[in-house]
Image 1 (cartoon, rainbow, N blue to C red):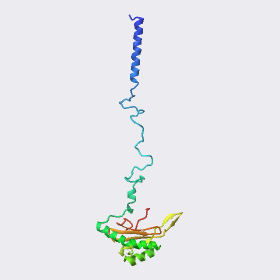
Image 2: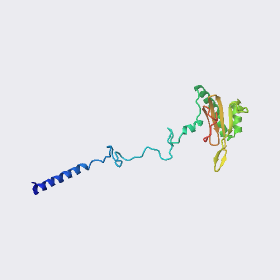
Image 3: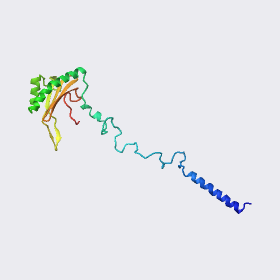
Image 4: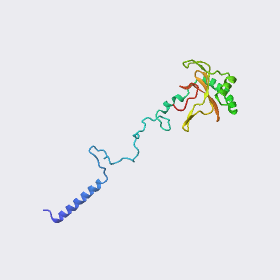
Length: 203
């Protein structure tokens, strides 16, 4: 027969065991039925997700600072073609011949197409390109034209100056210009759509 003293001792021991069990359980994480941490628990610091923002392009071209999609493809027409070493040397020689003429024209403020064309054909012996009815080049190697128009202050304007394209070889050109602010003649391969003329910035 259990005395009242024994009952008090058993009750105290039971209370101690229950308290110890509760203390041990406090540090454990709750688990779901398959043993993975509960969704509310995090194993690391919170951070941005890797999924793209709504409306963001899934394609970002390497090397494009602003992340514009297909930037390289869209601007392929503005990249000149490759030149062979011999063609590059020939084009650089013609650019060196042309530069002093452009410098003199610039100093005299003669940057209109007529003056530039007369100087390049008369002094350097270049021949203006002649084309057939379907645009095929029949003869000549020089194209001289006014600067391309641009949209400014709600209207299209044509800046002062002249653009120049000289075909040196099949794979080599001199692309040049002279305008009120500066002038330049440089050797490069032909452009995909515009040959030896500098292509426009917009397509």
